[in-house]
Length: 435
Image (cartoon, rainbow, N blue to C red; front, side):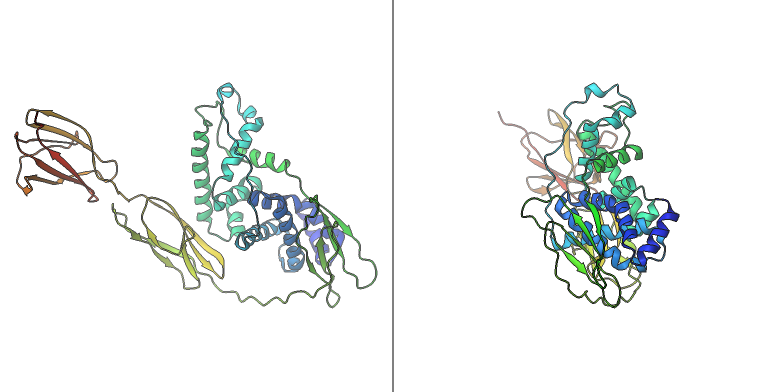
């Protein structure tokens, strides 16, 4: 729908024109339904969310100041509704059988277009996306299915633009690894590229295969009656969906979404909505933590713009202590909703001591080659003991080959200690073998 036409339809819908509202429903229901289905992979939950979203749209439509932004506005409502369902534990997720690709040798000579048309590859890419975390899946949907700009995604999710870019980069890098493990990469498939075109094709292909509910308008009959939108879903026998209603008050026409296979609900007064006081929510300014190599737990110091937040979470947990390398999502929560987020990469944990890569023994002469892949060998940490007593020892150090060279006399049991720069220590025992 062109923007000018959309604005006209919205203005009519704001005046309780049910035909105009049906046009909006028909135009956007597929997008709303697929967004919910992509989030939960459960058709009944997706249908419930469709109902709740369009009830919310009808109630709040007169608050929309820029009708031309209706698309991103309803997308934001849909995403928030999905998050609300997550919190309420009202959904059941069934991802179905795993889709794998066992053999791609016959595709080595195919063109890029043939790859885009290959349903098996498309399905595998989509299933790999679905195995990612919810924040990454959500930005993927908004970017490659809805084709929103980064700034529009930031508006929908109410997160900084930098966070959107970080999540998109993380999505592509993690997806690349997952596909390579299944044999899908530029090396195995000529013409393959993890491009925006491929990802858009994947989403559109899956969206086309999803059955979307349709809507019918039931005209109001008689003065004061409630106009209704009936959404007929193909539900199993005995299956019912949640019904919500908003009735007319003081001449304002209400709307009820219901399943035509079930009795219409009794009319109830609308809930009283409290006025929301707008406050400037806190933002993350900086996250400070030690960057030197360590083998001890570190605590993140999160600096915020103000104190208007309830919790600081790290990967969803309230503890700010980190004890392993990896990606960490630091977020602020206020009144049950996430208000800001930043992703950090921690790569300065070294929990392993050096290892012996190889060694040679000729008589009493020992040549020991060491290896440490993280903080590296600290040769200045060398300590030498004979019979439990520390003694000075002439030890040659070959930093180029990461080796130490020393003599240990027959009949002597010696212990050599060497650590990496983090302080992880390796104990090496030297003694001659008695035949």
